[in-house]
Image (cartoon, rainbow, N blue to C red; front, side, top):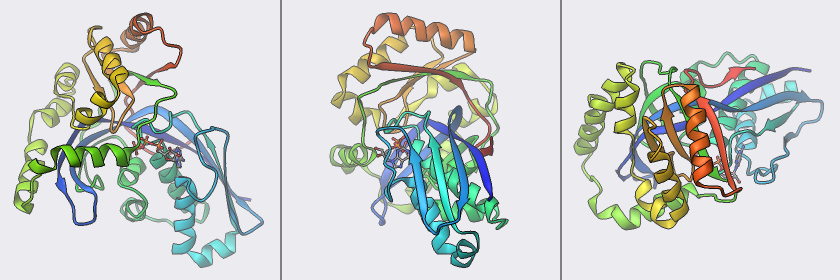
Length: 313
Ligand code: ATP
């Protein structure tokens, strides 16, 4: 039997700008993506049978073919049928710590871990670009999740330019446990409300992405300037998610009154994060917001930036 245990970190968006539509139905984006230490643990082992099995005891995570981890294993089976036949089936156990449907790429990072784990179990020796090419067939955030760190992502999020590591910043995340936001809903709503102002020319798209690449946020990351990064946080999806979910707006406001370096919703939400200089500050801010909003449905996590993506546990 062959087995591996992998750490699959979540991500936050430090910057998310929607530029326009793509012929494939996705959006053209410019994003700054950041891995964080909050992570799932994925155990993968070979089975003597020839099926793919996914176990997860989290009630919101499917255990059937719709699980992204299953889809990743199935893609590897389709790409390498002879190796699959030689090694047999696969059992994938997801120890879920990343909140689900939270804008933290929980499913995407699980899928990334499965691609990396199967590559190791089957001793395929795939390069990172080869793994990322497979990952892009499954979802836009999955190529990023493989390498992780601090990255500028363009296209639909799969074209990646690594930036200098930023692992000194801490953060506190908060999410209402029973509130989920569907990523397709957020983008569809954005298109219906703001589609008129989309960039249509390829050169204009390239110019907008280049502007972010040479702009103040990337400079602040290069300088590891936490307060500057905090001030430059940006997420276009807040324009549709916050009006639809007033309690997320209130949560954001509560964080803004704490003296954090910066506050923003991650991805399509509804998780809100506050950047902090230290773990002590993050814990203090968590306490402050917890005493302002006493709703027992509100969960918090204190964590920090991570410079790695998928790694062996
Ligand atoms: P993203 O930030 O990439 O848009 P997200 O963090 O908002 O994603 P996920 O946690 O990936 O959202 O979950 C979205 C949906 O995907 C869930 O409602 C769940 O049913 C389904 N899903 C499929 N596989 C997984 C998985 N391995 N982990 C979590 N959810 C999964």
